[in-house]
Length: 160
Ligand code: MG
Image 1 (cartoon, rainbow, N blue to C red):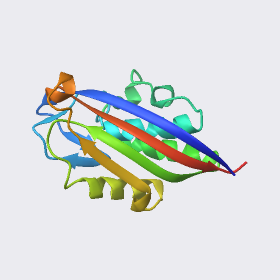
Image 2 (cartoon, rainbow, N blue to C red):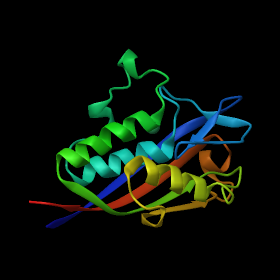
Image 3 (tube, protein in one colour):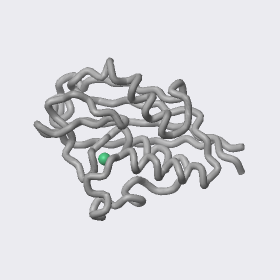
Image 4 (cartoon, rainbow, N blue to C red):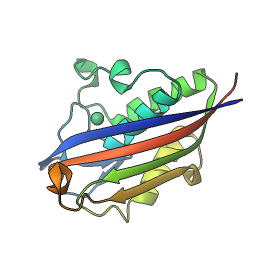
């Protein structure tokens, strides 16, 4: 059994009047992401972390943003596909840790539902999924509410 660590990052611009999806949960917000898909930065960073742990490229390799079949696709679809790759590669998730960076709204009341949603999609326990959130102290694009970002680290156990 070997251990593999993976790192993922994503950022999207925000625009008034769009839905805000994070971790497969719609968050009440006046702004949402400008994206080819639903712009779920947490799921995109998570997919990159999982793919990275297995050295299988990134989300753009598997789901090219210029491919019309992925237009307006729910990001949970990408996560389900990546989860199939984990199974094919005999990989098991030990834990996921994440940080979402956005100025508002507060995600305090949504972290549990995001962890539960991601855990159920991946077939793991919500206790294996950590979701943290913080602001960007009103500086730069994220601080000016023009963008949102997410960082994710995963640890996998892989059968030889
Ligand atoms: Mg993205």
